Length: 128
Image (cartoon, rainbow, N blue to C red; front, side, top):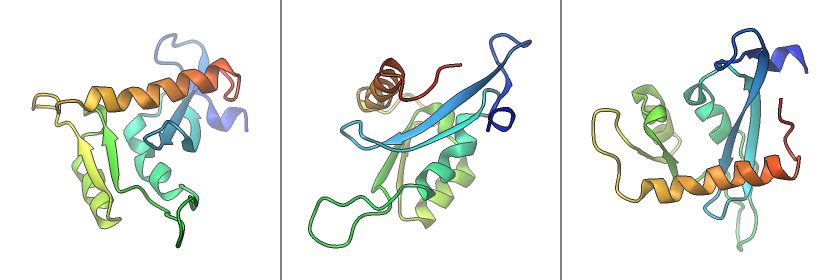
């Protein structure tokens, strides 16, 4: 696992590192985590995260396998991914790079950042 998931750090070019990509629900429960090399962009892992969500039970009936909507900041603004998400019947709620931010999206995106903090704080994900 070591070398395949490490790459040049964007901060210090001499050191290798890894990056965590996370998808979680509205309450901050992690649904899927992927570790890649530090030089891999977040947008490249979007579809792998959505496709990798396991069945989530909790309500009567068949467990859900995909989210209704995917929230993302301007770093996820990539039209081919938007089309692929729509094919999977997932509504992309992503700010456009050239447009003003979507009102209130930062408050919702904060849930993902808080989940990262909790996972790193309790050593659930190794920090390199």
